Length: 176
Length: 178
Figure (cartoon, each protein chain N blue to C red):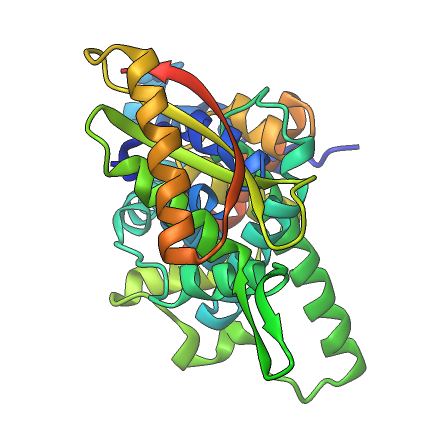
């Protein structure tokens, strides 16, 4: 029965410290949040780390969640920020120790079945983190431009610019 | 300064128009020109190729790892404190708070007319006992006062019987009706 409760009821319960209610929210939102992390990072293990950390952070920040946006949008915001931090940390790791492999060139980490989608995945991972985040939210997670702007905390114009440049970069890359 | 090649094709068509046309379903700004222009057609082909693959990728099923929920919940539950049920010179029994909360929640959910129940421990109970606060969502139908009394009694009985801890108070709130 508890599985049918609406997000807002579960969020209110979780805010009072009810872990069981929060578990239902994690179960309900794990797939889109995991997919977001996977598309941003390209690796299953990194995506799992980021998604798990995002939910743990959400639990700890619940007191600050005012319900201005849906729980889903709020979760996307936490996960996308953790994803961006992860990319930045990974980049500085690579600068310190260049022998670490780039996930983009590791075939075991290319997740898609078809070669065409594998190429697209590789090129998405080659975009700048800001462009990548905006593109993934819009094209793969199905958020509206307004929701992407809200999630990333930037202006609508900035979001449109990033997505436009990302699409052009991909079009150029597909041609090679 | 923006390089003109970044904003328009050699034929003068703004690239943004073609992108909007493919990705946002906008009308072609100049259909007559597009039909004859090789620059426009080449650009549209590239953009459509990206668009199609993007739709394919968006449709790819992705399943979260089977242990994701468990990993998250284990981490969150680990910090929970324990309640002392009994202690004597030979040893002690403690019960995780989460266990008491779970017993109380299941007790409430067993009652017909309770659609959702959320339970927390509240502060201020003497050692060796617990005080609880519970919020429920009820089905439309049963009279709320008698349903609420049943929920409080049942929580008290079950926590005492299965958790081994007396309940000093149950603050119950009916939060919604379905």
